[in-house]
Amino acid sequence: MANVTIKDIAKETGVSIATVSRVLNNSGYASEEIREKILSTAMKMNYLPNAVARSLKKEKTNTIGVVIPDITNPYFMKISKGIEDTIHPFGYNLIFGSGDEDPAKEREMLQVLFEKRVDAIVLATSGDNEEIIQKIKNSGIPIVLIDRKLNKKDQDFDFVIEDNIKAAYELTKYLLDLGHTRIGVVNGSLNVSTGSERYQGYQNAMREKGMDEDPELIFNGGFIETDGKEAVDRFMEQHSKPTAILSFNNTMTFGVLLKLMEKGYEVPSDMVVASYGEVEAAKLLKPPGITYMNQTPYEMGVRTGEILIDRLMKTARGPVHEIFEPTLNGKNLILE
Image (cartoon, rainbow, N blue to C red):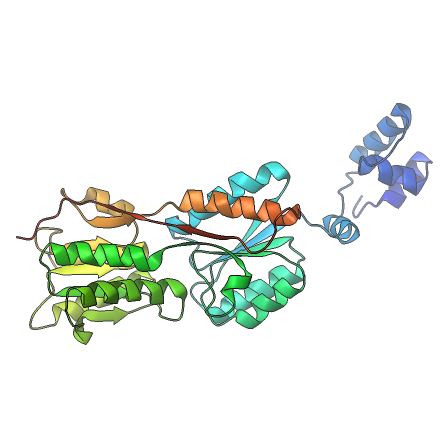
């Protein structure tokens, strides 16, 4: 029987609709005989509860929307795993969406989650969506920003981020201290906080060394693999090529490594590569490989999950701002 309702079960069992509802929702008293009769009838009739109707009644869906820029990026998947491991024991499930670094697609995803009445949203924004984000927050749906802040009013939101400026500064300074004076920089979008802040960290280190930026060695991309490939093509066209490439995201770094190998360069003997974030494929390189900022995405996800539970349980007071500090790995590169 299709679309079986509690009314059908009540008619079949000869008990009231209210009693059937109490038994199926395990929310009130019914004798063991009646309970067994209702449950066996529901099973026989292939009854499936209407989750939408139930959520409307309870004003709760037990779902949390997660919108990230790149669903294939291991960094964001580890964050999501940390969130899921934290919130699932409390009866919540995740609904994923990928913004693909496209503000328009991200806006569409946020609207869908809003209309689906998710209980909360975790967002790593691609930028330019402050209006709808504020609208959702004003409606009472908790939003936790992960990895990326908003350009405006982010102090009013919960967020779990990294100290991008400090980490990028340390990564750049490390290369400068090795003696590299021509560093090709593969940056992400300056329209999002991770792009602008990591670039600022690079600039701080350069100024501290009294060095000027070379526009020919700056490539502003969008945190995707092809950016790394295109950046290498541009850098290698220069009369004076870089001795090191600094990439501000693991996905772009992967593109850098692929293009260098395609061109016949060995890392690090022919070209030193430094990455903001670990690249799994770099483990296949000959020692000492690349140097990178070691991030802790799973732990960031766990902290995000804790903030979500506090919000949903209404135990949090005021915005929560959690800042993680990546650490430098691979300190064994030398300048030939």
